[in-house]
Amino acid sequence: MKYIDSHTHLYAGEFDADREAVVQRAVHSGVSHLLLPAIDSLYHKKLLDVVTHHPQLCYPMMGLHPTSVRENYRDELTTVEKWLATPALKFYALGEIGIDLYWDKTFDQEQRIVFKEQLRMAINHDLPAVIHTRNSMEIVLEIVEKENNSLLRGVFHCFNGNLDQARRAISLGFYLGIGGVVTYKNSGLQKIIETISPVHLLLETDAPWLPPVPYRGKRNESSYLPLIAQKIAEITNVSLETVAEITTRNAKNLFKIS
Ligand SMILES: [Zn+2]
Image (tube, rainbow, N blue to C red; front, side):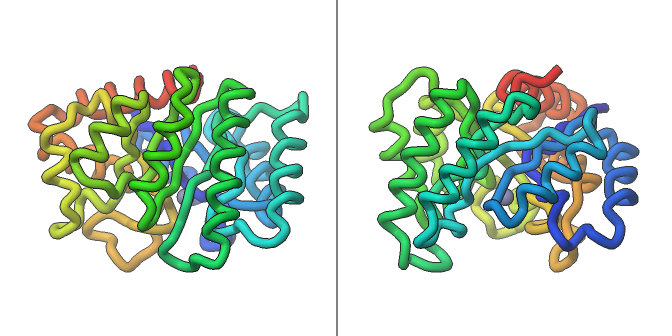
C-alpha cells in the first residue's frame, strides 16, 4: 500500500539528529511522497537541502506562513516570488499560507494582505494553495469565496472547521487535509469525516507536530501516516486499501506529481 504525506516539516530542527532514519521508516511504512511546506526565509535553505537529498521522495512548496508575517512581510513576499521564478527549481504549491489568530493578532491586517497576495501568486503560477487556518476558518473561507476564481485549488491543511465549513471548502474545489487530530477522541473531526467521502481528503502528518494516537505528546513523523489512514477507514467504513488508493490519487492530482 502507498501513502502520500501531503504536509510534513521534515527539515525542522526536531529531525536534525536522525532525519535519515525518519526517512527510512517513512519509506518502509509505504509513504511514497512527502510534500514539504515552507515557513519563511530562515528555513528555505534547509528545506531545499532536504529536497536535494531526496529528489524522488520530497517535494517542496514555497510561501510565507501566517505566523511569520511581521513588519518585514514585503521582503518575505519578494523572496517567495524570487524562488518561484527560479527556473532550476520546481515548487508544487503555495504553502503554507493562511491566517492564524491563535498565537498573536498584532499583524492581523497584514496576514490578510499576505494571504490574498499569495492566493493570487498561486493562480498566476498555476499552483495549488496549501492553507493554514487557526481560529480563522470563517475569515479564510470568505476570502477564498470572494476570490471566486476557478483556477484556485488546494487543501485546507489540518482541517479544523465544522461540517458546513467542510462542505464550503469542498465546493470551492479544495481538499481537506486530515492528520493525527482525527485519532483524538474529543476532536469533533470524526463526526465530520463520517459524512465526507475520502475523495475529498488528503492524508498529512504535519510532523513534527500533532502525532496520532498512541504517540500523542511525542514527536510526529511520516511513518505514522498509516495510523491516520486506518482511522479514516474505520470512520468512513471504507477499506484501508481504498483510503490509501483514493488519497494517494487525490494528492497526485492536486500537486501534479506522478
Ligand atoms: Zn505546517
